[in-house]
Length: 461
Ligand SMILES: [Zn+2]
Image (tube, rainbow, N blue to C red; front, side):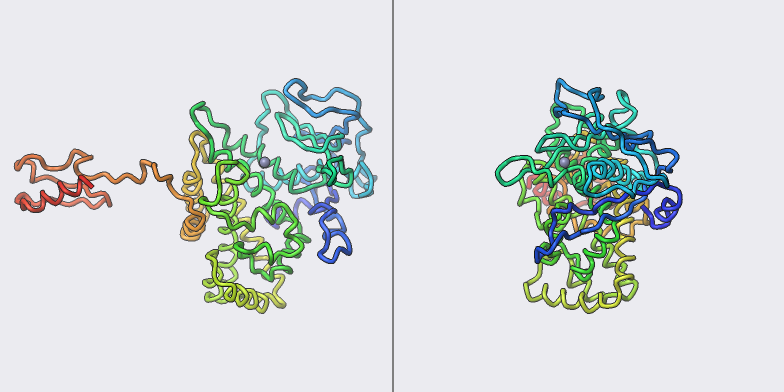
């Protein structure tokens, strides 16, 4: 979401407080939570249009009593008993709620899902309809059931709690307050709406599965970069060096954050199998690297880092010594320039948000491959930015080993014989030949016998 729109919404929307990251993430010295205070966020719905729950025309919270998780046989809508709906304060906003209370958790769940939807509807530049709209008009949000798990399903999100070391329910870790988890699950809904599902039973949907998980994570990462406190923490810890390979040791305390662990991964296609979470990592890495490269491009353009530092800090791994030097150079460049680095990062964030929205909006789910996604990203970049970042995208994907699958027909050359253009009789010699690289030329009528022999030999290879 653009900064301008965010400022406008702050005047017209409804305010909530949410924690950017779970309260159980601790500072490295153990002295307390990494994000001790909730941050005020404004959702696009005006106070007059929000009902107790909280609820609006797209979603509503139901704090169910003694509810079992939904299953194949037990589906929404929930009709059992509920706790009272959470009411706004006298000013119409929900910032009055005590973070220690159950009502805070319920309001957080609504505000998180609504905020992430607002952010992505802005990037898509249109309303994101629910994939379950043929049955339900609104998404049912169930915040705190007695369950050591969470799930998103057809028409609902229902969340329980984390698990203690000995396997019991950990009531200090409600999933509904976990921004990353909620945003990731909403990302799945966005992909169901915008990309759909494979329609052919013969489609193994291996890359489709990886794309779904990657998209959930990217939905969350981009949304997370809308918290001032999170962006500040990320830049202060890394000094703007967002190089992802071997990056987890540089993000320090933030390395316990789920989305940061996913974004700062060094996996290539040859490192992963077909399990969707594992397979998502090279794709997420390639797309996050693209954002980092665009960020660095702006830093160079603004004179904040040198072109030389940018060249040295590509996503290609260097020696340990190089990485230390790069880190030191970033630290020197960042000193006193936090505001400028922040602006450059938010520009790159918004480029990525729009790029993904256009890309997802054009993908077909059927027999989808990562190579299709790469090409859709290149097309989206041409449509949005005149193709300014084509080479960045190509290089980030090449490093992750994402390209056409080895058996792809795209890789098969077409020689004259395949195209029915080769000469079999002397009388055919005076014709036109189309070469694989697209150059059209005339073949001399008196092509030498040696030339034809060479062509015949090359067909066999
Ligand atoms: Zn997922």
